[in-house]
Amino acid sequence: MLTVDYRERALRDALALEHGVASLPVGDLVCRYPDGTGWIAERKTAGDLARSVIYLCVLALYIVFCLPVLVCVHRGHRRPME
Image 1 (cartoon, rainbow, N blue to C red):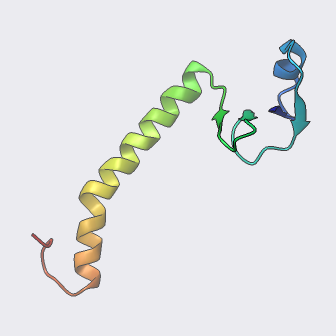
Image 2: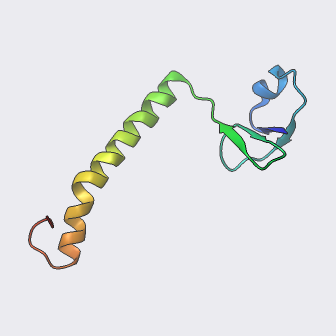
């Protein structure tokens, strides 16, 4: 069963397939198969995609470099754990 987020009016109108409409907490399209598997799709403009990639890169750098230091300081260590 294909479900389209209710806010995606242009996508709903463009789809020739039978689909449901709902308020989706994640994604713009959700496809659920009878066996319980499925997929989620999010439409993005090129600018939105670029911002998402930059955000994920910054988040990864924070996790790799800043989080270990914060954990060490919290535990009373003077330098990052090795």
